[in-house]
Image (cartoon, rainbow, N blue to C red; front, side, top):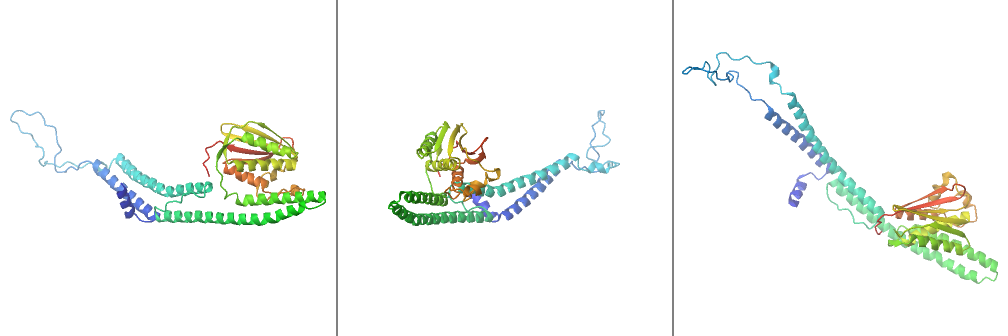
Length: 375
């Protein structure tokens, strides 16, 4: 079978256009041949007009001879019938049309399969590439157009991996260079005699460190890999609430959640960003967990002023800050919600914002309970 397949591949044109042209030609030719064969098979036998038609033998007396013997020329040739007797019947015409149409349909179906196969393969490879940059490259086989597309796709995948590796190295170098002067500033601030200035310097350094950490984590987040584990989400939410309460914020939680297959550090950062955003702009937060067999829904409510309807999607963009909130004395570069959205998408989930029924903002994180493969 493999030998026959290779032989057919060598005989066929190398381009997809050439193969389709050959396929259509073969389909049309096969339709004509089949239709002609069926017409010849259904054609009535041709009778010699000079031959007498076969008649039933009459009952003769013993020793009598028939007037006309079968197979002998008739004394008077029969008159030919009307021209319509020689026309093919309507069923033969319909059969001819059906055979030709069936041959063209079969050729069109095979051609559509040839066209759709490389497109489906590219779509599957693009989907796999979005989930795993180390996905095996596409096989460079098939017609010339398919080979060219597969080769270009593999080159693009290789270039993306190389660029991410270089970006990761750059971020690591910048992170080291930025944290070194922050460490020196922190040590010098500890040596200040005035406690008020010491606390002010310490708070500024902490805010700078948080902004740098958020920016660098966002820049290198796509290149970082983390194992998938069965995570106790309820315990994670409780620990986040305890951390916020230790800092003096009013944070409570409710509901239950069964363990979920997730990336532990990434999901913790996602929820921590949502809770930080709630206590920063609302002063308090309430975390509500709603579990179901299909998905886990986590809502973070805050009693703050909320947002205009036109800003509920904009604030999820990287480095975007609402104008009124950016004028407040709040640290941040507009990456917390964007990072949470990226982590939700990595878990094949979603993150949406809406204003509360009475006041405040509600951030809804939905995580499907799927067999997410290890990234």
